[in-house]
Image (cartoon, rainbow, N blue to C red):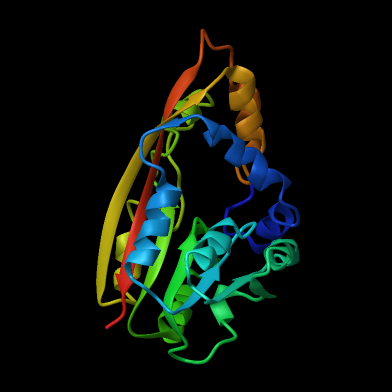
Length: 237
């Protein structure tokens, strides 16, 4: 089983957008707060002028924030394909690693890391780099999932809890080693999954747990499962 912070596994997974888009399709029917919208509001609420996003995926959030008025916005990703997709949206993007950011000290007001810190091989090296490129008073805004994210779905495959280096439960502790103050906002919504085949399809596209898809049996009807996430705001002194 590949670890989510195995560089080779991450490189394979994000060599194309197919797996990411397949997993996102699970969230087409959601009841409750939209964590992506809450993240968008959290960033705009800080009114940053100079923003770096690490691991932007296809660049959806970046494009939205640039449209909202943040003009100095840069992204980095270790995946050439994700960088290519960001550039297609007109975003300033380059291939780089959070563990060795190619920017000067105090270059940004805000760094965004959305659902990516659990992919970093050396989390504390990455967080130290983020702190280095933030100006005094700047912030890291990071989102991640709870260990109980989609637990009702994963229970069908006999695995309920995530074991990740950066989750809603352990993220604050990691951040406090590098930042003066850390705020956390839990966000929970409910996802309706149509049937067992949709569950198997989602699990089969999991970078680290695709082998569990065959464990899922039949369902009597749609499944409701909790999409449990957290937004952290870590402030530099």
